[in-house]
Length: 303
Image 1 (tube, rainbow, N blue to C red):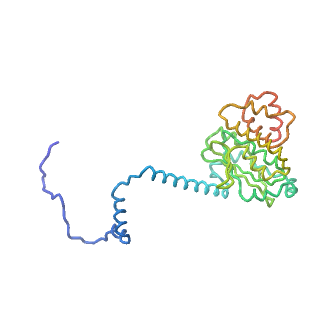
Image 2: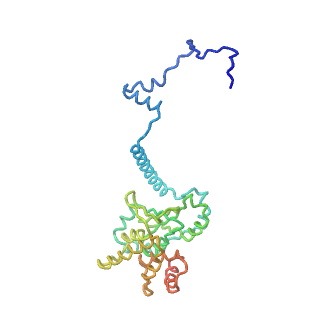
Image 3: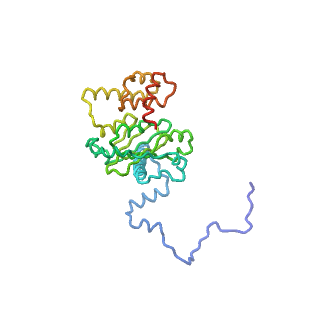
């Protein structure tokens, strides 16, 4: 506010020509091996703020996306190696309640003869399933029942983001590990519970992934079926499965269409009935006729 005269006059610039130690010019050294044309560019980048164009920003975002995908694949590989996913101290709540179901010994004797030769392609890569506890894929529970001649190793792991969700943990309790370590050829399935939409997401390799319970059952049926359908029956089955998949991910309530696909006399344990059962098992207030049909499969699958 007020400009006062200095009490002691001090020079604005103090020139000290006497140096005890002469230090090297580090900045000059870092650019000593760089041509002059590059030096000027690098120094300008240091001193001035660089303004990126929209195209350059888009390129950076694409590279970032690629790095995130690589990290995701590394995480999947680490999850396969570390069966204590997540940290053991965080998963005590679930692991104490989550029992392990051993493979039935009678299945091991028929393992080689009961399944087709394509199982070798299935066990080359483990199958990773990302499942949302708000939309659980109950068809996973039916895999050992649909294909009893297979040595299964199905393990369920809880993502850290789900550990504090009590409602989700209550749903997860119905899913039990299935272990079979004595057989040479084991089909391994790693199920990771985390909030993901759409669910489930099935990953076989970086280039092989699919969405939905229909895709999940089709993946295993492709390799494990022992009685291939005739061409006409397969076309009909594929149409029904495509319709079920469309109904399952429709924004409208199309439960009545699922009811129309159910026949009281058809209680065969196949992938069509299993996926219909799984979708309807999540819903409530079913007609008594449908409840009877659902109860038949529930007693078989939910142990």
